[in-house]
Image (cartoon, rainbow, N blue to C red; front, side, top):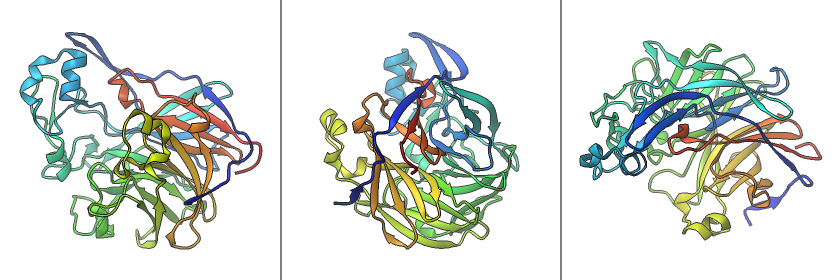
Length: 377
């Protein structure tokens, strides 16, 4: 067995009321394409924040596969692009990735403010850098079918960690890179892997980061309670490796030096019974979507396929292969929607979970759940 049962009593799950903030409404032959703010990619909280305050992040912005754009919205003029491998339409090409300050109330989630991300040369975008493997894998077009320009500093944000000094650490998949962001959204520094040059960035991370599977790079972050260390997890194992584990790196928050490497073992693919019943599940389908700091040497890890998700506690006191203790499973709570991506501690007995709405491109809403345990985590 790769894990120990560690669930604390019988947790109570409460869905918190929420309505996604509108971004834009685009007329299409089959009605309106209503785009909403996406905030479920990652969650984090710092101890010094007022009770209930949580920080959230979404990804690069709204995007649609060509065939989905044609079938769902009648954009048949895009047919010449339908056979382009990986081609995507970006309804809002200049979307600016952002952080959001949220407040978890008794019955409802509240949006306190939006913090757009700014680079040294202006607003960041979600368009992949020119010449990158990501740009080649997913050529991008606007709603008229025109090629969109790449962005050398573009980011596909996926995780956030609120640091005790008031800054944030944000991970993104294009570099892949890590960014320290100021309280108002300005990128203070950006770290890329050795051998990967980017204007204004420091190539401090191990070169092995460039071996991540495309679209499966840095996915979740946590910061130690004293702010001295960053924990970054790759969504999946590196290219060319077996799909049985993925890596969590412990990095020095000042120098970027690699302090420790941990191997996080995935569960057996067929153990995700809801996903297996809907379709065949393979090792490559398993992913880690977020991390949360609990206490010194203790992290929570959100592991999932699509329909099912599990939260494990891991002890990171020593490097190497991690033992997992199961804390919570959505298999026991079918009321929880698919596509969980964010997890954060609210208190020593409460977690906040969030789903990814894909910016509403296919009608999904972000769902937030408070999970209350009858003993401290």
